[in-house]
Length: 274
Image (cartoon, rainbow, N blue to C red):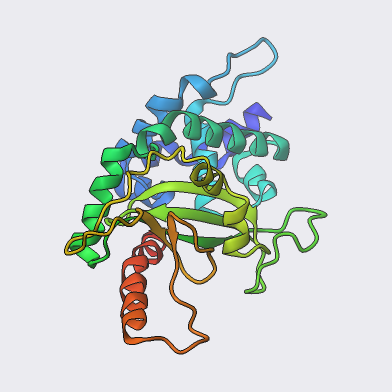
């Protein structure tokens, strides 16, 4: 298998060409060489195995290549097994190993839980850019299409008639992800996913370091800092949703809904950027 992998495996056949050509490298990995090496520098030790008398370990570079191709193409473990000349179970193990290493090493760096001053900065950004006071993030769910796992029934089957898992995310005023909750079954609604998420538990336990209530500009009445979502989400002290559209709204309520919708659009745009 090792000889076949080195002689026929996709990565070993093209790696020299990729390393010598930045454009081909980017097309294949959807990132430049600098970013690839940056990720490698953080997780290399965590995904390195020692060679033995019986086998030569798969290199960290090849493991990252397998994982990136899985993410980029959406190919099955069987397809990647054929391409890389690795066993299907090995492919699955590599993907899980690399993803866990990325989460453990990089999530705290790139998506740290905001502290109070960070929340205040986000709130100021929403005020300045979207004219919505005391907003500390926009929340929404995004369905990510998948091939349904064996024997999963309708767990992943969503309202769009596709199989999916859901990415529940909070985005700041500059389209940056600040909280993510990934992997809920596609059949669940955004509200249902939120109700069972770590985020709602942290809101209920007051462990997110959200700033104290404060009056918006032009008012002397304290109001909470809030995340904003659409009608699928519940109304909570720190979660704001629009007024229901099924009843007649006053002019003030209509204006409120319009401003909330405009500010909340940052999370939809952030998903689009992905």
